[in-house]
Amino acid sequence: MRTERLDRITDGGVIAILRGVDVDDAVTVADAVVDGGVTALEVTADSPNAMASIEAISDRVDDALVGAGTVLDAETARAAQLAGAEFLVTPTVNRDVVRTANRYGTPIAAGAYTPTEALEAVEAGADAVKVFPAKTGGPDHVAAIRGPLPQIPLVPTGGVGAENAGAYVRAGAVAVGVGSSIVDHEAIADGAYDRITTNARAVVDAVSAARE
Image (cartoon, rainbow, N blue to C red):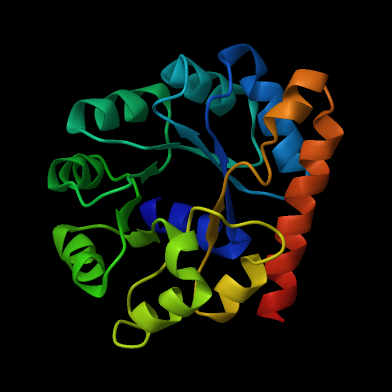
């Protein structure tokens, strides 16, 4: 199951990040994102009522994996797993979180920025490396990490959108993490969920085009 979940994330190529989305909007936002073709949703643990949002999405959205992001400690990791999180994402290499993910068979992408950190992440047991913050170095930085470490799956996150997702894929990313470029809080406030669907589709199309 762990491998199947990883394959779904990499096959889809896009993780949409729901940060700061209220629990009352979570399922509607998730549906809008999935309608745009995204197959992996990350609810950040620093969002209000994050665990309730994960549980609600997990219960009601069948066409995508739901995971937890910004996981900083083992306690949060376990709470997310119990709420239904099917993968975990961290901004740093935290061995306690990685161990908790591995103990219960949950795929994890650990945050790293340098080749040393990336190697430490996978040696600690991470399945993939979230290159974060990606916007600091851009696609060239991802390509530079991949050069000596082609065996490590890289998921650049931070400042990624439809305009540069393809460049990250061409640099060697197996998927991209995308936040505000998809989950537009103004659109949520306006009830314009079709805009979120359009945003999601634009990123999915960019990734698909780059893979071709």
